[in-house]
Image (tube, rainbow, N blue to C red; front, side, top):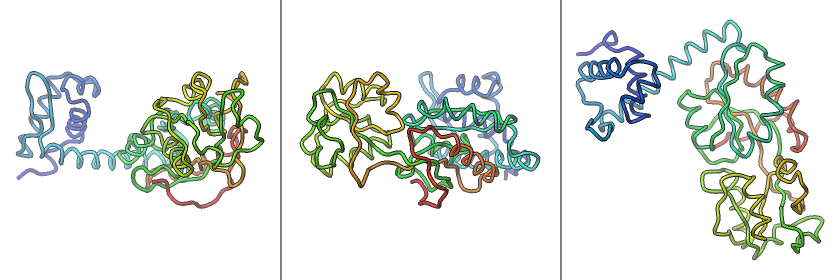
Length: 315
């Protein structure tokens, strides 16, 4: 029977790398070892566990059912090991060392250029590692330990509950081409979008889910085009003659030439709550709360800074 002395964390790291990349060569490159060395360790792990972890042929590598189950457990072991290291590091200085920070695409380009320099000045010992991904990827990577924290929209229905601090309230606005009937209005009510053609983002963006829910309530029609970014949405408004919804945070950049007619919503104004979120039990939770406070203090003026308050966890 195998014992803990027969398994190493390095073997588990190799196991997860092969499962993620579906290839021994790519896994070896990721782990910075030779392919023969990695393959030998996987074979040794299979021998110790007494199960075949991967199906291999000339065309592909695929986890076996047993391999899939054990990869999930290996991820948890590696995450806990990472927690151990970070906890030890945090006992010395929680504001030193690498901090892996993510942000959703409808926040990152409008916020990071302004807030990152402030974070660097405030926490000079931190080494920020930044990533831009959709909500589901960020939540998964936080849960599995690849990210420390992420800037998300609170009502994104993704993943498990996360600890968080509210950073800002970001209202939505309507953007239309010049000459559109909405140009005559000072404020737009949701019912004004009834029977309008509306451009939205592609699947996977939490901002799409939020705006699609609003449009569905009033009978607006989604145009048969899904944008990959807010920049594309703004450009397609001019090209198609349709309208779209934008977060206020993005307006100064996406309408910097004044080409769009932008109108606020009448109360109650739809919008999103932006938060800094992290997995429960993170060893640097108190440091992340302090970082959230810094983010609130330097948040771009196009979004309304939030008061410090307790709110439901992002899902």
